[in-house]
Length: 93
Length: 91
Image 1 (cartoon, each protein chain N blue to C red):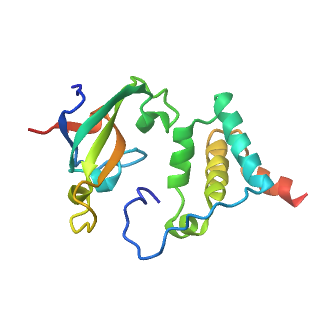
Image 2 (cartoon, chains in turn brown, purple):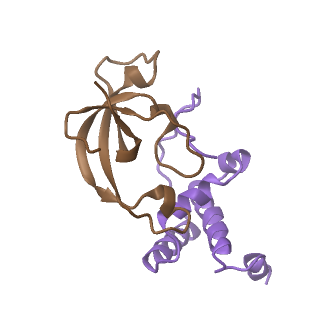
């Protein structure tokens, strides 16, 4: 499944043993696609002597800091941006 | 030590710049060369860093973590034999 700029997504809440690039503090959080990056070798296999293929689409995802850190005391419109691979994204209605 | 980001802390963030020591620039060059030659990629480097124990990870500087990971990955690939670096250092 691919996503477009402006689409709402949720980071898959699943646990994952071993190397991966999806921060724990974003798992289960809802955000918005801000930019569609290129496709890149999958670090989850590339870190273990494999070739990292097939390449995975990477997205820049924006989050409201209030959603990421419940108790956040800063301005309402403060946001956090993270690069997240496609296989970690779920559609958010 | 995996997924260190996002842990709460009361410690202030150290934003000070610091001069890189010669060995740190050398470490950077070694990792760059190993990548360019297809010996070790950045994902393997990161996995190596994440394999550090929590106490060692916290005590280590940025490039000390690179050194730990590089030694581990190169040993894993058979590029370095067990104890080879220690023998070289002891000479």
